[in-house]
Length: 292
Length: 292
Image 1 (cartoon, each protein chain N blue to C red):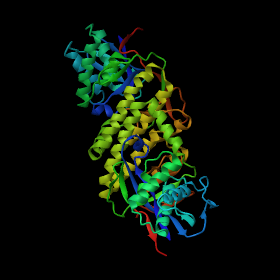
Image 2: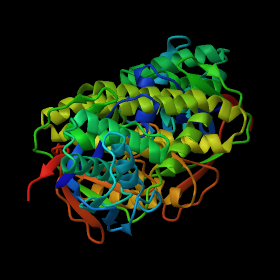
Image 3: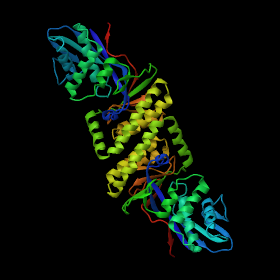
């Protein structure tokens, strides 16, 4: 049985969302796939290698099997994983693999889990591996679509909006960036809180801009959010370079995710020389069975 | 009799101050000088030309004479004007010339005006010429020092802080930039208001940073204020270029004044190749008689 789950982009609001403000997140048409077959023991095969239950090499897959086993014990399974989603790029590949694996196990063992139940398991796996986590990534990977968080209020944007994801070539270390913002907040409390408020207002303003297909407003919001992220100290030379190059072409772009590396998103379809550019569409379907 | 009055820089808070937020302004050691001598008719000699009372060529000087005449009628005077302050650079040259002329007339005609009275006249001249105006420039030019506005609360910063003023080579049209921000506010009300709030918090945070000579904090505040001004759409290619060049040297810089051209201020003493750089010190003395 084959299942797949989508990656995600944060459109607006990263970092500020850690401090109670709003963010907007959308599932993208890059997916992770998991094929589950009955077997006498546990084998996990992925681009990372071929292992048994292995919490170092395959932490998300291994914890997914462990959590699923609380519902239906898994003695043996052959799991094959492949993915469109670049790893450590801020595109939610960890949650996508978790959700896809859970769904493939659900299909193989006919446990008939609801999406709510798959999400709850994926949420536990996120905490098993990371210790912390907002639950947003497993949520979006499970349900698909576009969401205002933390309320998890669906935003109906249709399928008109295409983005380009441009990889900086430098890993984004989320914990480092979250700590950096926390330090700035410690030193300049009020200034940083007011920047969070400005980002919050951008996320809220984007709802109507997304619904109305208002590209002028979206461009303004993308540009402004990027300047505010830069003010939070989470941009870097590599990101600035990409954003400036795109800006010179008249294309608004911003960090997606924690920053300090990782990926930049640009409105529309872009091919930027010398960079890995991935064209993605938003508002993708959530976890699903793949018929072969 | 010779009198002089200082120019000013806005350290933090331009544009936001138009919408009721705080700004910090300081008198600088660039001054405008006015020499007044008794004569049978009125002559104004300046780098702009030699005229009689002329509201086109010498609007500020002519209105200053007109307003002063309400206290003590001026039949004739020979006024010579010269200045360290570049014109239309956001450094308050108009108010400096107004205040210097009023003081030179006061000295020549022995009217013994207080600084409060000189400020009130200069304030009227600002409105005569511009129609609108916050009164900040004539205030700082008269009293000198460093001020939190709109409260006009003096900030005692001593004389340790040097800045470099770098001219973009492009005139700053204040009315255009004020209108641009008003338009953005019309379209994205809440986002723009929250950016004003963030700028407000920068102005307030700068008080302790200035008093404590906390260069790390001042650097952060200058950088962040510049990003927020860019978010308000009042930066331009020329400004970005200067700010980026300085940033690459590790020197924080920001627009001073309305932007869209005009001047950039950088912390410390800088010499940037290909640009007119003026080293200035802050917290300069207000209007005064120059003894020859």
